[in-house]
Amino acid sequence: MTGDGLWRPASGCGPGCLPAATAPDVSLPRRAGRLLGVLGMLSAGVGLAALLPLLPAGGRRAALRAWARWTLRALGVRLWVRGRLPRGRALLVANHVSWLDILAVLAVAPARMLAKREVRDWPVVGALAAAAGTVFVDRSRPRDLPATVGRVTGALRAGHSVAVFPEGTTWCGTAAGCRPGRGFRPAVFQAAVDAGAPVVPLGLGYRYAGDPSTLPAFLGEETLWESARRVLAARDLTVAVTVAAALHPAGGADRRALARAAESAIQPAPVRAPVRRRATTGVRIVRPVAPLPVGAEVGLDLVA
Image (tube, rainbow, N blue to C red; front, side, top):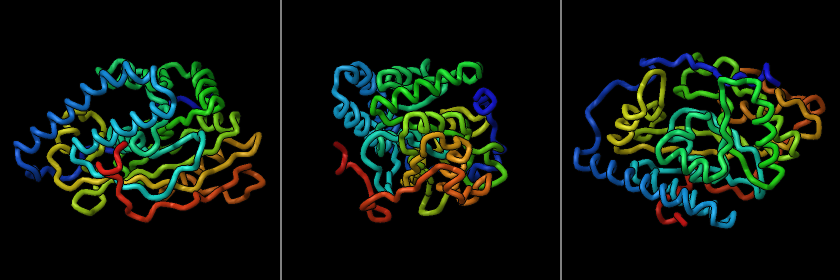
């Protein structure tokens, strides 16, 4: 598994992948108000980090979901959801475009996250991530990967959902030539095979003023503040989360085939051709029941 899991990928994105600089859509007072709102949510995150270990599992999920949704709202980002998550534990896998992805996933599926070790040292966010049961991976130590996959397996066996970005890095999300060359890294999919847990692909997409956009992307040498300023200045920014059909791996299923199937479920042009022979892959696809209407919005009225 060490050869599969050297999680130090790079995308082909550069400054040209970002939209041309334009005048802010919202006024300076509105941007300042958004920034104050975000700072308030980060402050609330400090208290939440201390409270989470004391809450029952259902309470932790509800608190994380509410915090993520309110933080998106403070940023001026609308959340849309298509489809419905299956009940019970699952390995949730998503494409990776922006730092907003984490908020979007938590707002829909408040799962434990798999994150790089550096996140643990981030102010507020690191403490909140640790309190929420995040599994941290040191990408500079590939020999530790089997143990990391084992921790994800343990979390799944204990009934917890775990969310992962298997591309291992952000990219613009639109240009095929920019996608990380190896696509979804297969190592963590072994956890779903070993735990007998379904894999649920989540497709994340961003729209600005109604059109697909790379405005929220977090790329290359850009700082987090530079990316956040674009988001704070945008008037009509939406993140859409599409819940694809669950993949149920059979015992001994090929993790590489499982990764390819998950990737092809959410990417319009997968890096690899999807595997079609069920007998070879050991993966069964189950469509979600009673999906939400297309474009069903999750907003402040649904925060709980």
